Length: 313
Image (cartoon, rainbow, N blue to C red; front, side, top):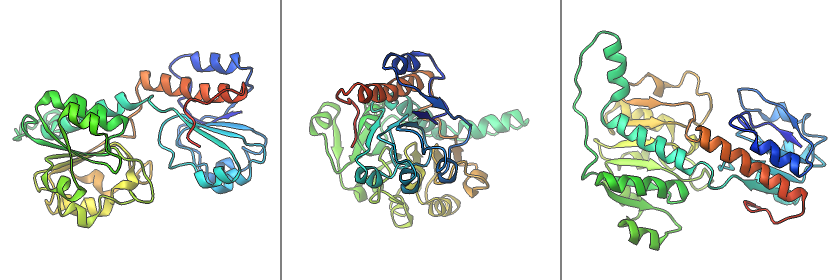
């Protein structure tokens, strides 16, 4: 087995104990940056299992891994893995479902509050000797719009109700029991965009969500609204978002995930009403430890011929 996820096992040895207990032999190939297709094509040829992070497991990578039988994601999002190619080869794909929902939800809330009170800008200016006091926004009584009510979206909603926020949600798969318990109203996307004061994205990146937040949808958002994306960069059209921010069509944005990472000389990084973080939503000690254990458990269960708890395909 090959492990390319650079944070795998970095917060404890439990994941390695799981692999050792299942008598799984593994090699580790770590680096700070994610591995691209060209980095992996030659490396994967002799392995029957992979534990990967955001590394690109494309059709070409899969085609060049004739022995590959299982891919275990050290994380939840599967947009970096060609699932169709894996299906065609009957390769099992598992994800560390439930490992990072609290971490991502907490970062979402952190960014929401930081934008509402312009914390990052104030910090920079005070340290530079300036003393500009910006009027902020209170969350109490405002409307939170949540796109995607999976595990992460639900964690955000559960916490933000204690702030006294009204919550609207958009999801094709509606959890009516949860909505009733937390007084959440499911509405069409157009209605959510028009009413939300704070808009957070917790949907997976798929063909249907690619550039979901585009020019036409950004126009629907309030000029005073704030957008938070801790899901996937490709869900937001970054050029359209830049135009909306420059033209004051929305008030601000917090971005943890970019379409291309690292984002390089992205124009969004030049704006004072943007807070940017380097894809750290799931980057807590607790979440990394759980991701490592869950991804190792999938490999161990496969090796033992057991039912794989977090099997996706």
